[in-house]
Image (spheres, rainbow, N blue to C red):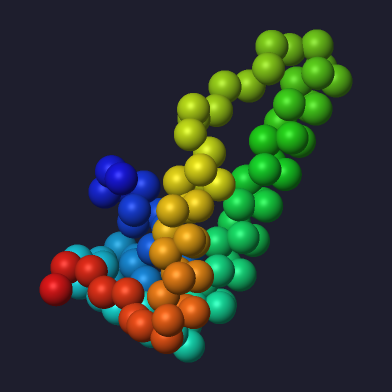
Length: 97
């Protein structure tokens, strides 16, 4: 995953910001459920925004909008699977250590 994409996912779960970059970090098991909720909410928001943009373009008889080829859902899925596996095993996720 490219750095910008990884940083976006970490921002969504509250583990990265411009003020506090996430070169190193840890996601504890007790933080995993809220992280999954945050990721799912961000995915749903992006999908709604895409649908609304398409509907608006259709209503205005404009060409459909162009989006990134890879959706947030596609980028987040591997992370979400890892979080679920670590949550079940009660193990933290660390990076940059």
